[in-house]
Length: 275
Image (tube, rainbow, N blue to C red; front, side, top):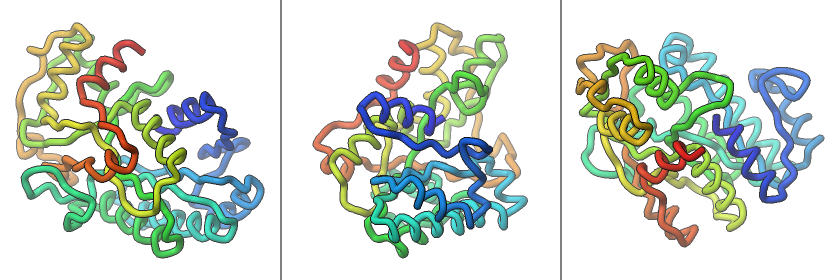
């Protein structure tokens, strides 16, 4: 979903984009570590955006070796190749690296205590990239959106459920500050244009809310019934893989670096509706 938005946005700004998907003929699986150097050498890009990842938390928990190979080993190899060929690298990380046990927004320097294998391996991927290439731009993100062909993600689940009149549970004790995927793509493009220094940056909306409030706002903005959203807690769901309860990110560093204010969640929802 992010790759789709990134390609469209960057191409609209005149960038030449070399796409690598998971399957031939346009790409390969990053599990094939020996293919990475060849791909970078052939493309010789100015920037590499590493947006690959397994966001299925349960899958990462049951097969941590596969998660490590994708999130850590492949990321390290990408950073090495970028270093060899003089490329800048953007590593797409996650707000899930924050443990969620503190109140208020997390700054980039906040203590990291991953609560599941997905978050642990994504964080170690950050460290692998920065150790190989100190100019790596680590983007910790949370985003929502709708893919034109694939029905997955929070927004698609809410839209399909609410349109069908099905009740959905919204976590009242899980807080985040997500961006619309096209807004995130625009901010990443701005980071490239400004040639931001390497390091960790939080990419999130300018305000935060609970998953329950997000689901209700989503319903209202799309003209669906907000009464179908019922309040639940994370404990009520009894999910097999632990989740952090508060991943709200401070965006002060990014806002100052780009010289702009970050959009609100409502702005993203309205733009999603318009799109």
